[in-house]
Structures are given as structure tokens and as C-alpha cells.
Amino acid sequence: MDISRHSATAADDGNQQQQATTSKPGRKTAPTREQAQLGKLKEANAKYKNLLKLAKERIQEQEGLLDERRTEAKQLKAELSEANEHIEKLKTNAQGGGSGGAGSGQANVIDPNETTI
Image 1 (cartoon, rainbow, N blue to C red):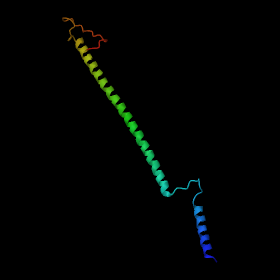
Image 2: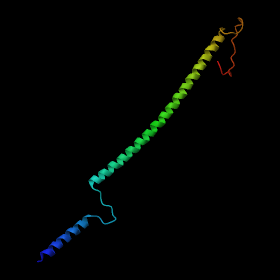
Image 3: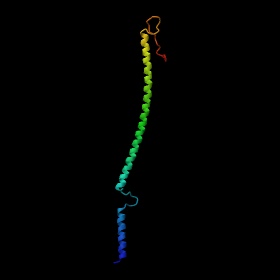
Image 4: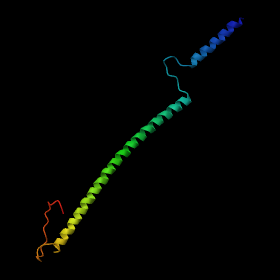
């Protein structure tokens, strides 16, 4: 028996077995466990980053709404203060404490369209 021929045949058998375990050209090979885990981690990381981006956008939106509400509350407080002052003046005038004439007892009528109090 020729030893060189036997060695060549053994090498050919090894090549054939290796080709059988690898995929055919153009096909995707099955990922290893590490590759699959890495792919899942990358996907989870991308989802996490997207969630962070959405949360940041939502927080900024809420901060803007909060600023608007604070400004609105400040304006309403100022209007309420003006209304309360106006009411106090009306009460004072109704009690005769205003300048309704020399002891006439009539309250001064304040024009509701008047912008200054």
C-alpha cells in the first residue's frame, strides 16, 4: 500500500468533513452562542438608547408646559390681586367711606370698563 496515497486520501477526507460543517456560499451561518448574545445585547442597547431619547424629549416637553403653567399662574394671581383690591374699594365705597358726596351716603359707582383702579 502506498503511504503517500493514504495521506492524500486522509487529507481529502478532512477537507470534505470541514466543508460539510461549514455553510454553502451565500447562506448565513448559524451564529455562535457568543454572537447571538452579543446581537441581543446590541439590540437591547439600541432599545434602551431610544427609550432614553424619548424620555428626554418628554421631560423637555413637560418642562415647557410647566413653565407655561407657572407664567399663567403668575398672571392669574396678579389678576386676582387686582380683583380683590377692586372689591375692597367697592366695599369701602358701599359703606360710605368713599367720597360719595358730603354725607350723602351714596357709594361711588366705578366704571367696570375702567382699566386703572
